[in-house]
Length: 514
Image (spheres, one colour):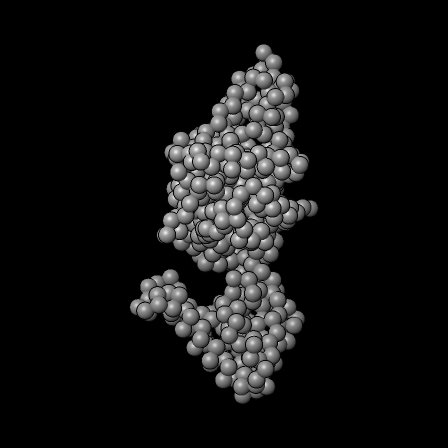
């Protein structure tokens, strides 16, 4: 590292000078240079907190933002203006460090928690000796001011910027126990709306200027949105989370509701396919159904795709508890609750539909009606991206041996190969199942040409989408994972010069029995 100077990023805490740590106070008191950020036309709050510790003769470097919430004529827009600003600031501070001076950069709260110090750290820490001194974060002062326990035991705490898009903020608020929402100001109305949609508005606390003389706190619902300053945040205690939300192993027991004297008739359980990923592939029928239910139940990545709204409780769980999810849905339906069980793709193709009917086979659920709404399936979208590989007869299989033995999968692979069907393969490989693709390849090569066309679709419909057209012999099993769907062509499946794949609708009788 160059230069004899030393750089310190010093956390000052939330505002009360008495919350500055002893180490921070010592470093500020011995600094050659003290730097701090401030807005246009404003006085630095960091300087206000620490000025009583400045030594005589200290050099003050005022790092004034070129823009905060206003517009800029910079050709790179706001991001470009800020990037140039941070470069210019780093250059100024580097001059002091190269001269051997000790430079302290003041940071409100903690230096690496939503602070401007980190941009100086990014540019200077690899060139000069650097130390970060932690500070009390603002949310710790806010919870202390409101005397409100934030999280207990195994509660999950999520810290969220209020600048998130409202649907995403609502989703995350619904899925966590305790939460802190930073960066309010102009975002406050959208944040309140997100809290309401998530069912977390009751009990949410607004805290303004925590630990400062002007400190105040109140229920979020009582706040005038026009009065919200930058130095404010929202505390959502874990104790305010609705008891049903997000508990993977929860089953609502309702045996008294199954007889003729039930106080409410059972509601219908909807089983919905969300499609392979993009919102544009969600059918209007499914979208309308989701708007009318009180509960959404499913594997967490699929539940995450359902926008949070007021009156909706989402129950997300892991990937191996399908029947438990189904029983939860049926139990809630027995109580008259409107429930949707969601799957990716089509719920009837290796999805939750079969699991719901399996659970409903138990006598207590005989009166619960079940309706399955179709979704666009992964095999359809991969085939469409490739061309028309399933234009003729085809079979669909899962290579997962979690619910059936590999010996049965192998028997079915041989039968499909003997029948010369195009074969779509779901769940080809996972972290715990690493040999099935290679075994499938070996089995099919016993029956099919090495030149058989193979399509590998990965993350189709998402930003990471890729499509590979290869052959059965050249397929590399090590490149396949759970994000892939494979289409193994039949004997007459062919690829065009442009790389598209299609299977004729007619049968080549000369190939029968070959």
